[in-house]
Length: 318
Length: 318
Image (cartoon, rainbow over all chains, first blue to last red; front, side, top):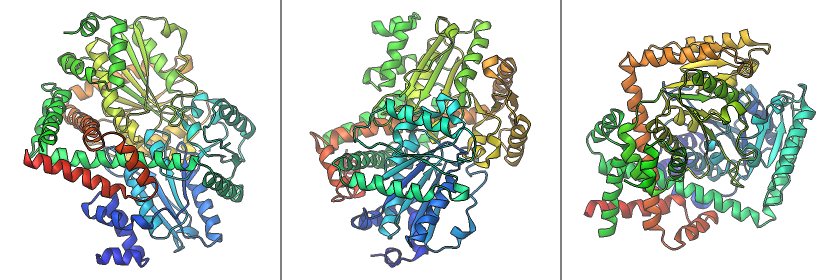
């Protein structure tokens, strides 16, 4: 066992941060660690929080974390931030967190950027959740920005997922489509001191009544003012209710199977691409191929067909 | 050449719809077609429109399409909608479009769902853009919901990308982070008849002044009321200006290279996963593996290591 892993298992926070960095950078060394810590995972309550930018997710996560700290629970927060695709850094850098949390050793906060994780953000997030779980952090809260497919995949790795909305969005039907209704185990109307709360709640309940969940869970709607700690205790209670419900049904295992499958496929894709790039595009061949595609001299499909054909032949002959 | 391809090349709309379905379903037959039409691509002006739910993207796209129709341009719209991850269908189904557009044979509207495209949404969208381009549609407008990594990747396939915001979002710094500032070649403040336009514009200009684009383009801010057709002509003009700017610089080729690389990697991932699932998980072995991972009996990393090791060995020995 490496010193890093030993220190990690002894609860050293710097070792934890180092392991997470290895995992986030998809370093080969991280895979050994992940394999070795796997038996220790599955203990933490995992919570996902998603919603459009501006609904106050950070404040909500901070208040929720503070509530768990009152119960002396070691609380980890992973904030999945899409970073700048062109210049390679989030404009505003790491978020500003409440001072109370940032100096509390019982709270671990980590930002993860989506940059560079082609198809692998969900895989990387699931791995980081495992790392924190194995290190004894419980709950582990995953916060994502946006409501795209990536967020849906990220949310699938958690036990309980919360969709955050704000009053006024209900004016636009679009605000509630985009699959967001069916990700949520719990709906939060944050910034409830603003006008339009009843209308928003009605919109949520109407849309929920139109869809039917195969697992029999009825998502509650919780009203909060996160910056004021209003409704946070109720939210924590509803999270507990939801987790308890799924512990008691066979739907828990189908949910865990979905998450496991998702994760296996994402990991496979990530590693297979590595192998294909190494074997099929040595010494700058990738850049040459990219240039030909960009200039419309070569079809990307023709090129990929050729690479796949060669790999298939190799497998067939081995 | 197949009858389908012949009909497609003759401009038959049903053949077009059929080809798009094949491409969207990632059918093997679609790859032959894509290879054969590739030389005909690269003619259309491609435009991406992105923004959070509720900012009025659909109305904006509809008004913009109507403006292109005044120039008698055959206008295609691809609406990339995340569909329901659990029940498998968008709750509200296909969007409601203006009647004027839906009866106009010079407008082609197609929704694409993100479901089932693990890591492949950008690849599928790029393929559909190529299909429409080869069929002589110009411009091709790609509308996406949300601001996640998927949307960033989808937006990379277009020539000019537009980020849509609304007044009032500026109150929340978060509304403007998430990498959204650096995807935009043009910023639109829609619903400009609402209060807070100046503040929003100021926020955008401030954030733009903080970032610097390597390509020298200064993104303009266009104010619109899409439902009222206000500002749409100016938007069309700015799209033209932006496209003309990039045609005249060497940055165009670096941009096209980025898009080509992205596309090649996404296609590779998609096809490699297919091959690996066929060869490494025959006859229900995948479901068994998934069950073991879900029950924490098997680490996904250990399993993937084994699959990758076997493929690597095959390649090495061939």
